[in-house]
Amino acid sequence: MLQVLSLRRYRHLFLAQVTALIGTGLTTVALALLAHDLAAWQAGIVLGTALAIKMVAYVGIAPLAGAYASRLPRRTLLVGLDLLRASVVCALPFVTEVWQIYVLIFLVNAASACFTPLFQATIPDLLEDEEQYTRALSLSRLAYDLENLLSPMAAAALLMVMSFDVLFLLNGLAFLVSAGLVVSVVLPSPQTADDEAPGVWRRISHGMRIYLKTPRLRGLLALNMAVSAAGAMQIVNTVVYVRSTLGLGEQAVAQAFAAVGGGSMLVALLLPKMLERVRERPVMLAGGALMTVSLFLGLLSPGFVGLMGLWFLLGVGASLVMTPTGRLLKQSCQPEDRPALFAAQFSLSHGCWLVAYPLAGWVGAEVGLIETFALLGAIALASTALATRFWPSGDSKVLEHDHVFEVHDHLHYHDEHHQHGHEGWEGPEPHRHRHYHPGGRHSHAFVIDRHHLLWPR
Image (cartoon, rainbow, N blue to C red; front, top):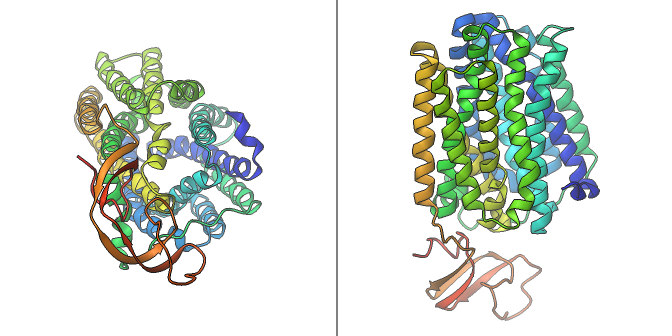
């Protein structure tokens, strides 16, 4: 897994990701404590609402960013977004009212909604080899998991010597370091996207159309809902369960968060070898089943040790789903469509969180935590069942399909769909001229694009 770090450009981007994640992890703990400081027993409602606002920013802004990402310089955009996030997060220590939390959370996550899909879509352009990319995905998942494990532990240690609002300032510093690491490398220019069909809405919806027309990605969307149901219960209600139900202190909150990271990290270490022998579908469906089990076990009203075990199991399940996601997205689109498709995944998956966060917060506060375990467990179960139905067990990259005769004009490379002569020199590829596609039946690695508008039956 560590071999990919020998590539300088990827190494710097990975370190930028790790640095930003560590800072964000400190803010996750600090935000929970800030909500409890301002609202006490209503902390679940405050935190659930704040995270729902975060998801509104993600869902609304990510598709717009994905539509125009290929038209903007990558490095400049990533650095500018890091600087914006740093300035906003440094304002959180000065919050005195709940509404101020909501405003700042929206701003910082609007920037993240632009940053994250563009960052994720850049990695496949750096690592075109499938094995290298798989290792990079596992390493990226490991970074998330180490953050889940180490950031709460670091937060617990820091809270012994400083107040929680200092953690927000450390996050701002982390974003500045991330920006410096991105500045230090030259990033590949995105492949030119076909702009034959202008219009803001068409560009915004392009990635969504690819996503929702691809069966394996519809299954992924259902599994995203299972991840959201399990994750929302853990993120929103851990502080309430540990502090108010079990009567424990701030360090116990950080340790409970760390248990999730431990389970997820274990999977990230083992999964690259596993994916050499097993397809993504059974691995990811097993993750959905594990998360469902972890939520239903919450009905037993566990003590602190039991809660740590449930959260560990939840982390295992979430990592089984999330680690192979990049592979599915890369397999399901043309290189020039990656920014749009990664943005669609970012937006749709966080749309699931937009549903799950308020449910976890409001039901937990108004009805009870045991009832919330039951509700979110039922959602995870139904979502995993839908994923099994949407994603065919015989899913194959190469599909036989028919084409009708077509004559059109668009920007293109000479690939398996563009083998034609020229009347003269048409300029370097990609170039634009009127050309035809003969009808017929053939097979190749199939993705939804401008030449394949529907999935074969």
